[in-house]
Image (cartoon, rainbow, N blue to C red):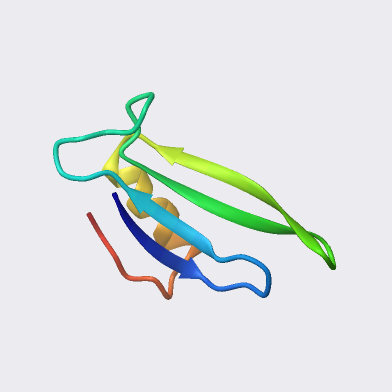
Length: 72
């Protein structure tokens, strides 16, 4: 598994996790993004976005993280 930091936060970093070539995560997902949203001053809430196709992953990254340039 490869991991990349998409954006840095004070408490947590939003990260992209990609399966190795020829492998998939449980459920048939090729990648997932762990995003943290502000909850209060001491904690964030975690949201996981999963992807089964490369083109949907690339579109999501292009729309939500334009400064991160990575295409599978």
